[in-house]
Image 1 (cartoon, one colour):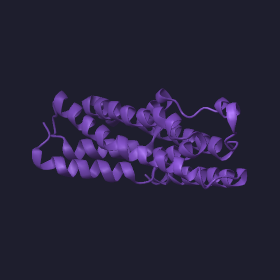
Image 2 (cartoon, rainbow, N blue to C red):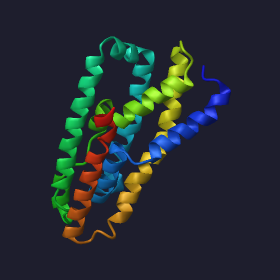
Image 3 (cartoon, rainbow, N blue to C red):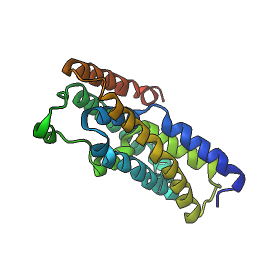
Image 4 (cartoon, helix red, strand yellow):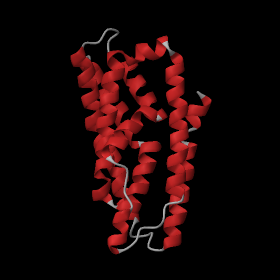
Length: 201
């Protein structure tokens, strides 16, 4: 199990890692602006639950697989980088939200897409491997890994939700199409900048 003395540190680690800017939060901020908070909820849940599943699988042995075959991990990192650039392009070129039914033709990221994206997200890998290495014993039990993942999910969900809510609040300021376009381009640029850890690792 996780040592009781480490729980407070784990919660603090999860909070800081989840609330600070990264690919997930930049995309949720843009989603809140472009689609609103309610339509961004599946994206929020996909991030938190997908990350939790990732932590469980990595904690139960995927890390050893990547150590044995580092090219798999490197491949995931670079595929993730390419996908982030694709997402940045989609955000930058997104049309401003339309009034009425026309807005429904544009779709936010789905639950499954957000969950799958965690495997391609450099920050998610850093968070998962850091938590596993720091807060789990050398030979963790399944229960310990599941508990770690549950704590990370519980802390992560409200943190990333805040970013979508902040995006919803920004909708009141971004009332002109050119403002929305400028915001989307800025978010796309920040998303690309979030690749820095991937390129320098």
